[in-house]
Image (cartoon, rainbow, N blue to C red; front, top):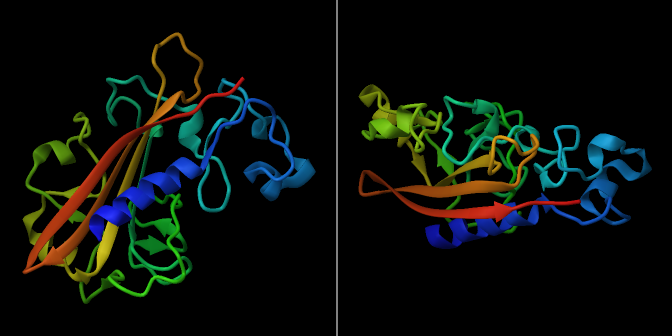
Length: 220
């Protein structure tokens, strides 16, 4: 089940990629949200003045990382504006999720890219008691902003172990990093490093399954 959730999440992210050779036309994601009112920011161009091509969140708004790419070797500490990270529960879209506050991630204050079907009824995420939306790890690289493995949802505070694991069902961590290839390239994303990790509790231990991928995005 975790594998299916992980691959579905990656493909859903891919589907939120506005990547079109000409300006958005009738019926596009942008047209559906802005109609004829969109301006220069919502047409396509490979510079810091155009949010597209690039990813959009579940509200149809472009991600800020689209115009804040980092180089392939750079870490969170080098350019945090390039990083997007959301922890969310496996729940039907619109349902209560203890990982979010008013629809935004409690740690990063970002809006999810992915929404899960209203028809799912099994393995749903359910927070219990003292649950906190963090992920315990003893891997210091995951809590070090200078490491390529860093994510703000991780903690190595052992006193929080029970609270981070006080849930049922699945929860999903999505980390996306906007990249460009060379320093001289425009300040616009060329591709994304995507990591999706699905967590669950079994026998008093937390397990995970992860999928890493790259998504290209480009336009004239």
